[in-house]
Length: 258
Image (cartoon, rainbow, N blue to C red; front, top):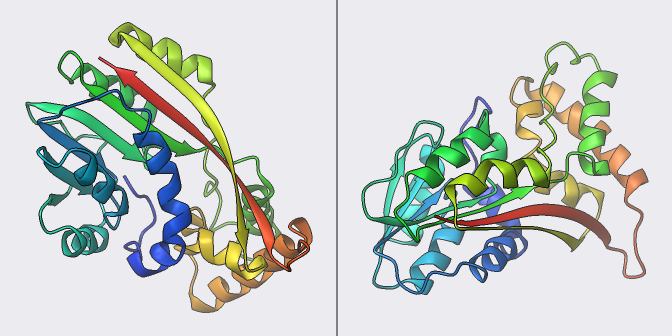
């Protein structure tokens, strides 16, 4: 599910908890499910999105899965009333009675994720919901500059293939999921996060999108890569009137009802 070679860092991820929790909150608001027996947060991370599910359906069994043991440990400490497991969503099967599969910023990491989405939707009971949010920002300066930094330094060979693929089109998702669903709702939302400066943007992505670039490098190479990347970011994201920079962050949302 998560692809870099080292485990994820929950503390670094949660540095921007408020900003990272807004998309799953917005996704949750569009789920047409009054009652649920079992809800599963796939790619639960440190449990911030799982906590939203537990509040929305207090009588449901709440399960969180993630391929990162560190994230699962953090989530369990945050929400001891839920059940958390280390699992890979690429092969994971929802248990019987699952009424909601919720995926916040995880499926973009899963190989052939459209096929996985169709499989999971098909495994739900009638009226069950698949709700997914994915970053759709590969063509933003933040990500284009990762790729530029990767090919511009002595680490180019190590980082070949580190860039994430562009998401399929909205039409492709609709055509794939509609045969399995009574209703499919797909939309985009562009968030604009005011951050402290270029180093804050680098910190934001160090816990997520930069991981495939940083994981193959040794300590000195990582420092040099981050310095180069941050300098490029400073040029692409000028300070605003209050000295902060605006990180534009497009995201794709999908709600499919079985």
